[in-house]
Length: 176
Length: 176
Image (cartoon, rainbow over all chains, first blue to last red):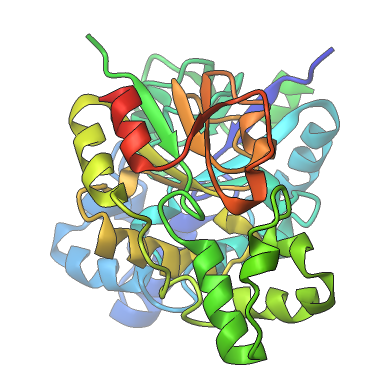
């Protein structure tokens, strides 16, 4: 039987992007943005409008993506998923051209069992054909034609209407 | 009515990759590889095995992708296609991480009417959902579930079994 296909987002699903913003905010602004980042349904882009121009520069900083932590249990669960499913990593990296090289290196470093042929950098995701999409953004899940799985992140905690997975252990329980 | 979707490859479809190899061969090896590159069904990877290790280094050279010429009529026809179809550019850039930034800049320079959201860098292409795929490689066309269109390049001239388009004027005649 043909394996089912799972498409998995990177930022705030495999990689702790929000944590990286917090870290940069403490180091570069000397402010603790935790409260803002934990405001439900506010993305980092909108959570602190007064800092937005500066934050947009961080994303373009060398090392910003390279230094992200892996979210808990992601490595173990994704590796186990690859045995039963065809796993593609699908990241909207195209918006930040400099991030692409770092994101690919990050994948090679932390998820070396994912071959480069299964990594996709894109803008829109609705043209990806898969059975599942694990993503933290409604804009990606909304037009997905398979089963969308909303991966919890501070900015989507109030979002309704999607099957939610709060962490990788819940993905494991659902799919393995 | 929903627009039909066309996925378009970059190397040897929009960009004259074979021409770039010829140019590098003349400049760096002082040899004219035209004959080898024009051998039907031989890709540049296999056409001149004795130079292959060196050629693999060219691809990793800064500027290799940036300096590619646009294939004749590609700009005009692709722009016209965007009015009638949803056009995605789908390039297997992931194999050469350094190429990604240059490929994106190349697209912005020569095809500025293609928004970054419609550019995809990947390895495999079979998970792209589209009505048409214009590509020069059988490995990409073979598992594509829409209408595959084989774009002629020296390395695929003997390939049978696909609807062939020899140049962008033929794409225009077929799709516009």
